[in-house]
Length: 130
Image 1 (cartoon, rainbow, N blue to C red):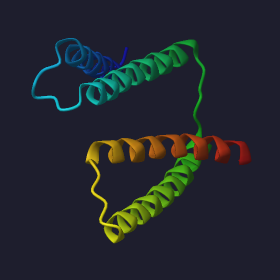
Image 2 (image 1 turned 90 degrees about the vertical axis):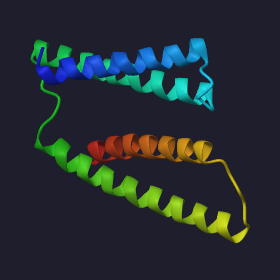
Image 3 (image 1 turned 180 degrees about the vertical axis):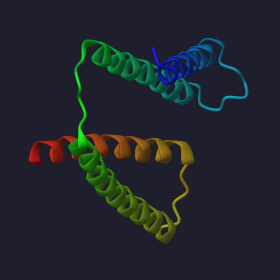
Image 4 (image 1 turned 135 degrees about the horizontal axis):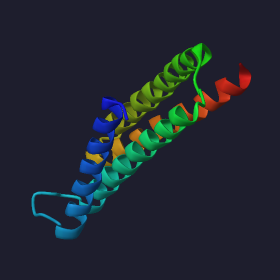
């Protein structure tokens, strides 16, 4: 294994372990136990799965990326930025106009989900077009 893969696995295991610790012990300093555990466990599992999947592909000789993928990722990132920037601006305007007070964590979680889902969607859409 490469050093980068080992570091990614260690970091993924640390995130997963921290999430499980917070879920089991529910420390007083954590304001939202389920939000914290969901984010940490999800990030840890995703990091471990992606690292192992890339390692398996590299060992089996499958080359999944080429120069085209960099261009696709660039286009998908830009389109995702455009969408999330517009959504954030609209949300900020609506909240300011109507003087709505929201907790930050659910709003950030929704924007985080929108960013990830839209990037994956645009990446696959541009991949099929090219």
